[in-house]
Length: 291
Image (tube, rainbow, N blue to C red; front, side, top):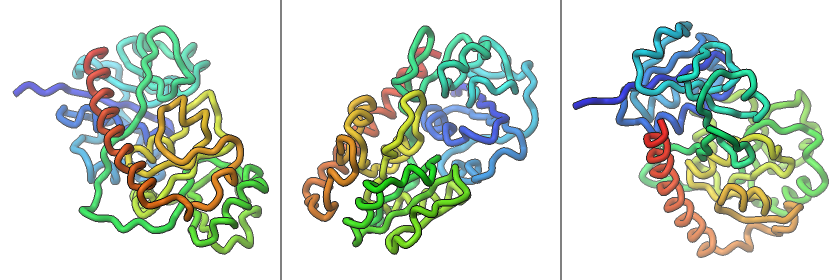
């Protein structure tokens, strides 16, 4: 039986989270991942190896390798590790296209579009226990600064005092605005495996209120992958066609999370499951058709 051969290249110490949707899309193919040895700070390779079959090759970025594969991806468009028009690059910021030789690009956000740029919402199928008893936990993930914890955010945390708020964040050395909040835990520099465990027991994913509109926010894909309803602003929900509890401008507009009925929550979960599998199937059809 013929199997496609797929290669994924990356030498930068970021964007390894993007490997997941490629592994999901091409899970029936032979996949080789070429990385710089020292970049996997959060042990994404170990985590993904529990979900998919693939090979890891370190510190080999020869352009001659391209001829060995049906499709070659680069995790970051401006990564100089491999430059060739046949390489399909993930474009994280629109301006980076000008310093990349690829003929085709993948964008992970509807905010980046253009000629030969194809939008993919990056999700995958994580390992799930037969039954996970999630708790009253709200989790935020990603780059977030201390100054973003404004009065509205603090009040939202306080008014939902019987929920635990987990912040798996980076970007600042000091998160003093969270001091004194008894229902908050701060997690920094944890592995992807540990992060997956924290997401799995969460009830909601808290989308950033201060969100960049020129790039993708990884926690959106994680929420869909793990089938966790988002607490998300209206514009982001509409732009990405997401599922969750929506606020206009302020988290406190939502009120108490306990006021959301079990029926409403369970309907959100069902919608997420259906939507996720539609997106995964559509991603596979699009990538295999285009490339």
